[in-house]
Amino acid sequence: MSDDDRARPELDEILSSMGSGGARICEIDASEAGAGNISVCLGWEVDVSRRFPRTEQITLPLEAPALAGRTLLVTGSGRRLRQIHEDPEAAVGAVVVHPGGREATLHTSPRRLFAQLTSEFNSHLAVHQDQVARRGVDFQAVVHAQPIHLTYLSHVPAYGDTAAMNARILRWEPESIVALSAGVGVLEFMVPGSEQLMAANVEGLRDFEIVLWSKHGVMARSDLSVTRAVDRVEYAETGARYEYMDLVAGGRAQGLTDAEMSSVAQAFDVDSPWVR
Image (cartoon, rainbow, N blue to C red; front, top):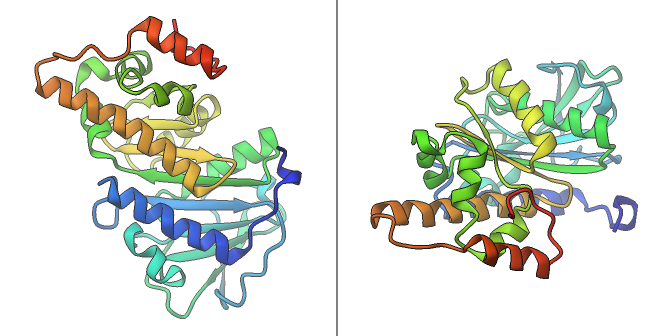
């Protein structure tokens, strides 16, 4: 199904999905306090004035010409993802990008409870800019979370590269190779919010739909919904949890064999570099 074939969701529906996604991220212990953030990029005209009547002009952290005329819904810095569903207007701002992609109008609610947009806004914006410029996507959701077991494994040197991480976390459930057929891209540690992390994250999300920021967290994207991006975080974290359990148990479990993973991939017509 193409983007044009799908009904474009209304603003209320998208805000509701951000709330549901944020709540689920917290349910799986992937967002402590104000950690984690969500953004959605809309490629069609949407009236945000009813829910976000206050406006101010802002300069974007990077030029995003491909996003001109688009609306980005972005969580505010320090807002708890678990509380978005209670009052989306308090936690979310709507950014309408101006021609040229350097300036924008930030629409907020009188109930706004954040001073500025998320500190990871540069990474969100850069991913939206890159994906729209390269692929022309009409909708994209981006989720940053800090799942405990994935983040823990990234502190262990043996799991410090993409091949090693995928070999270990995709072997625990048959669904994993289907849901995460491209796997999880692993980035080395970089300072949160830095231009270095922003650039590496953009490059990583060209090849993967979820990347692991070593010793920090993950970022996942989806062209379908916030829920689908959150699902990717949940599948990856579940595999990491199994791997952690096996480490604690002394490495007693076998996991899926190469032949078993191959049979699953064949049955579901999955093309994956992690299937031998």
